[in-house]
Length: 176
Image 1: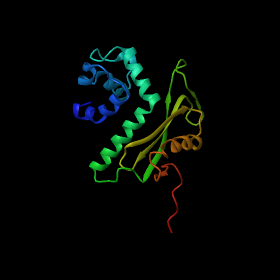
Image 2: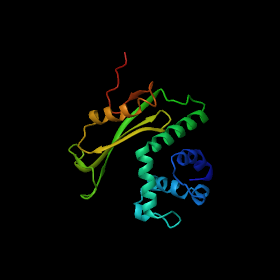
Image 3: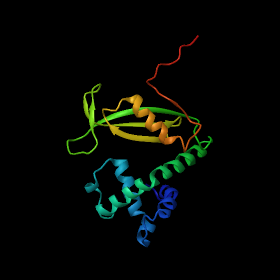
Image 4: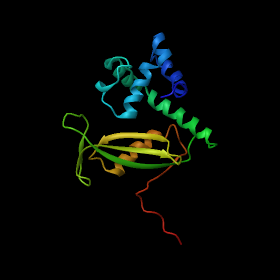
């Protein structure tokens, strides 16, 4: 993450008490490391040495999750990106989809997706028409898409009240 990109979200992180030391504020070490994990998909223990200790990074990541900071940061980044493209800040339409990923036996939440024959997790996500992520919910893989769609749609209603949701797998209306 560049310094310019970090500057867009740092103000939100500091307001939640993340990065309270001078070093953290200057480098964004504690704030940038959860984003590094999310971007690369690396395990906590595989963080490069330039980041703070794993226990510190986990604490910040979970604090951001529990306080809703991830959602706030994403909301502001989507609005900023849409405005830069000359669009309205809030999307009026979204596209919903899901994906199943395998997990190991020791990984908490999991289920069996009979259609894909996979043990693991399923994520339902909603993007705007520009491809920006506006909603995400992770479930056990045994959740049907129709049930998972209800949860992820409900999760964005407060932030994006006028957003109509479309599914790429739903039957397209017939043309006359």
